[in-house]
Image (cartoon, rainbow, N blue to C red; front, side):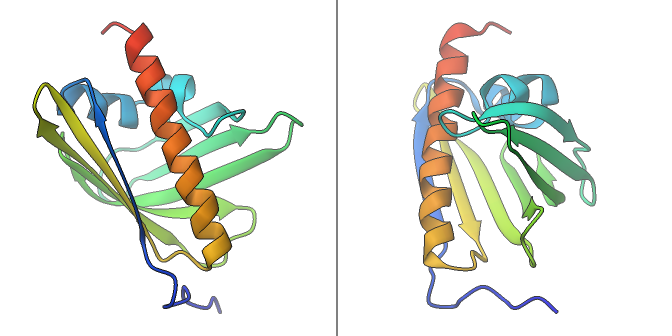
Length: 151
């Protein structure tokens, strides 16, 4: 049986103001054809993305590292509230024994959107640090993609 996350490890929150409306950011976050273009920390390519965008629907994102190694992020949507919020489980496959939880909020902010990622149920501090840099670099990729894309 899986052990729960270490209660001494706080949840992780990453925020970024992005120059696009919540509808556009929500679309880029939930459509595979967009995810494959921007998702992933620096040096990691999103080689595959599958999204069944509904409560109980599953998603699967393939991260390919420069050395060719693949890591899959898989989970299930708990709440889908377009264009304002997504709540989903997060499991690294292979490897993780229990699902973490991610909440992403898309709140209007001036001429853009404040994207807030809250990552919970993290098993230890080392994983938290990896997630923090990963989320920051994913948001960097989102901003670059937005600066070069049109609808």
